[in-house]
Image 1 (spheres, rainbow, N blue to C red):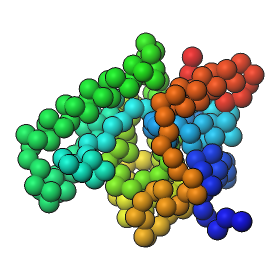
Image 2: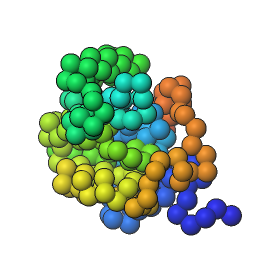
Image 3: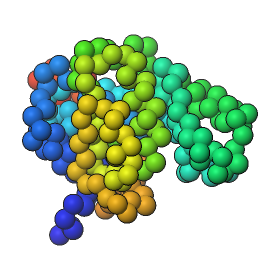
Image 4: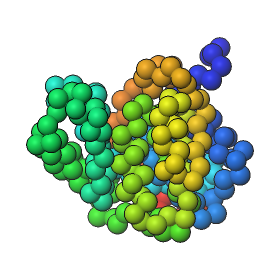
Length: 228
């Protein structure tokens, strides 16, 4: 038996998150669920299915510190939006010139991933809609910040940030950026997202494409739908 408030995997996390959103009254009406590839799409799929809402994705890439890629200095989101944590850059001794090179590299990766995951399709139309932005958890928050800034420029009606697990401090920092925030498990002692999952493997690109294809197929049966 698993411990309370502990996720078996991203599917379990997505189902728990969906129940939290349903309890807040969210439905499919004028709602679009966006997952952050790659792990966030697995969670978002379960959310979209439970709400009966359209599913799409929003591409963001973390800008990692030189020689320590796991330490995020910021992120680049599709649409050309960049967020950089300059306090952390200063602590790490990362210059603006180095940061620009890192950002350019990640911007190219974003462009490539947009083409890979979305093909020739246009980005989802979020104007006037309730956008539920989903990831599998939030540690430093750099990728989420970039995604939120990029989406805000497209004039959604409301943005709801929804995650299974995150640190208390980063949630409070992000709260002013959204109309609502839903988190199943908020922790004061979050060291890593994976520590709250029994199974937390890397999600391959093929799984992201499979979930999006399944969403499109299920749309024909009235289930979770992907934007045409």
